[in-house]
Image (cartoon, rainbow, N blue to C red; front, side, top):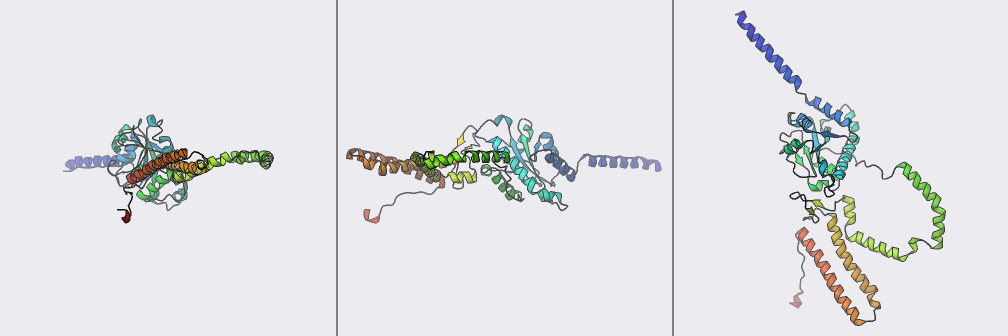
Length: 352
């Protein structure tokens, strides 16, 4: 009987060793977090570069729920030269968001009460290196980014893709996406580098101080460009176009001029149907039409009144009215198409 118990004890011992070996070979969630933090510390911007092996290690092979979430930016080296995709710019904005997030949450992560909700890691994947990962996520067009929550089991179905509007304002709109979908606040503004360095600022200040006496002398003599009325006329037209084309809206929201069509990457979208978003090309088109009407009215009130030929005045007024009607009708047509609200004329009851 003792002899029969020996094989059973040996089998149990072997099974226990196999289980312990399997547990030792599969890293725990904290081990994966430590690896991600190490990879993040090796990147200047905090963006972790993933390949198929790392995607498998941190996502497909790691059991859900994981103690971390990943925000992944999908990139392709062969498409970076296409200006309509803005991949280098969007990647730099993504890196800026990662660096700002790390800077704002550095104190929280360093404290002992660091919460798991702050375990969000920013990553990028390149198509040439990780085509299998692109297939796992179902990514077929760029630009593209996805949030992989801690509870995601299927990378294609459970991850949350960014919309095109989430790229419109760069790092700011991406931060809004993170706060809305991951429920993780950025903790502060986007930390952008200053436009000029302190050394450049000192150089400009020195140049201004050196040239100040010469500039003051020319200003007092009235021999400068600012005394030319043609300059002020051009600036007035620029301000008018700046106001009617929605340029301030484009600057504040960092709106792109156009967007690539997801269904056809070779096609560009210049006019976005819907009142929630306006592209830069739309504003410039409407601003051009308003500029045409404004120039016609300015010419009619300032130059046309001095003409001696009545027939020439009438002819130009007729042409000007037709051009103004065409421009205004195009603006109304674009507004109807974009918003879905119709604008049409009403006749007074007494005219019917």
